[in-house]
Image: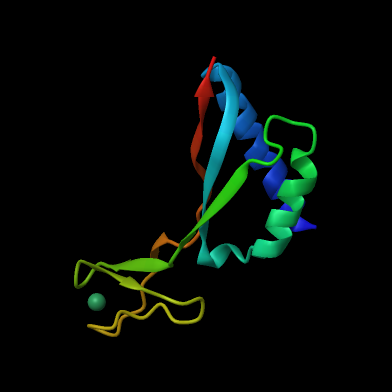
Length: 115
Ligand SMILES: [Zn+2]
């Protein structure tokens, strides 16, 4: 399952930060997921629960920020929303290759207490 390796990478980042900032507990983890990543949210949450067992992340709330996909039009100098199959600027009808958001898969923030 694709989601397991994603969560495992994500947790490695969390653990690195826990050590770096000398945290004793975590209250919340916020991640950003772009709509083009094709992540299944329930699989992601399930993988998270499994991988967090017996770690500092056990029972920690996972907040998923969904990021809408957008692209930049060189012609109009505007950012517009796109879908996977339609990246055409609504103003000038030109196809845009400059995807700005939608591919995100990052740890946005980690809330917790320091020692
Ligand atoms: Zn345009």
